[in-house]
Length: 336
Image (cartoon, one colour):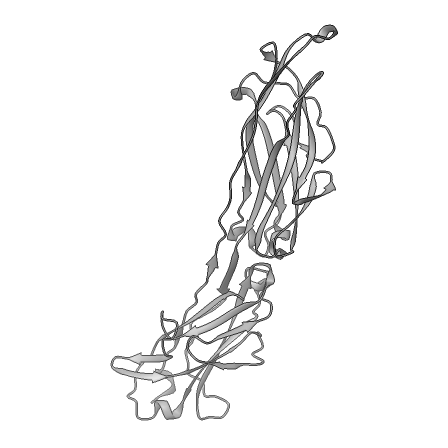
C-alpha cells in the first residue's frame, strides 16, 4: 500500500470545571436621629440599599497572552442622606473586614483556600457627580452631596483586578468583606456597619490549542512502519499540573483505529508533556498521564509544551487494500 494513501485525523477536546458563586446583600436600614445643637437642629436620616455582592468572573478573553489592563466591575447602589427631608451632605468611614489584607491606596491582597493570593483595587464614590476615592480601611471619605431618593443617589463601588495577575493566580474562590460606616454631616453617625462583599471566581480551566490534523505518511526511524508527531499547547489556569489521556473515539476507552469502509488499521499512541518530545510514553485508550505544570498563557506564548506521536507498524498494514484510512484521536486534559 502506498504511503500516500493513509490519512490520520486528530482533534482536540478541552475540559472546563466552573465554580458556582454565592450571594448576599449589603443593607443598612433607615436610621434617623434628632439633633438639637446650635444651628444643626433637625432630623438627620440615611439609608443604604440595593448593595449586592460584587462577583468577578473572568472570561477566556481576559487570559489572552497579550491581554492588558484590568478587569473592572462596578456595583451601583442607593445611599440616601437627608436633613428634615432635604438632601444633606454625608461621608463614609471605611473599615477593614475579613479575607483581605489592606495594602494601602485602595489595594488589597485576597487569598483563596488553595493558599494562592490575588491583588485587587477597591474604590468608592458617593454620587454620580463625585470622583472615585480609594477604599482604604481606617480612613474617611470626602464630604459627598446627599440624596433624597435612589433616583438621584449614584453611589458606586468599583473592584478592579489586573489581567496579568489573573493569569498567574491559582483556580479557586477569592472572597473578602470590607465594611463602611455612613455618617451624616454633622453629629450623626450610623450605629451599624454595612458589609461590602466581593469575590473573584477563577475556574479550573484547561484547554488544548495549536493542534492540527495529521497525515501519517512518513516512515519511522526503524523503517518498520509509519510515524507522525504533532506538537500542541496545553493551557492550565494558573500553570498548575494536569492529566492528559487519549482515546480513539468519544468513549473514554475506545480503541485506536483508522477505518476505510469495513477495513481498519490499529495504531499506537505515545504522549509527551514536553514540546521537544522527550519522555514519550506509550498510552492505552483512557490511560492518563500526569504532567507537572501547564502553561499559564492561553496559547503558550505562541509556542508548544506537549507532543503526540502516532505509529502504525508494517505488520498492521500488511495485506490491507489501498485507500484512505482515517480516524479521530481524542485528547482530554483536566486539572490534576
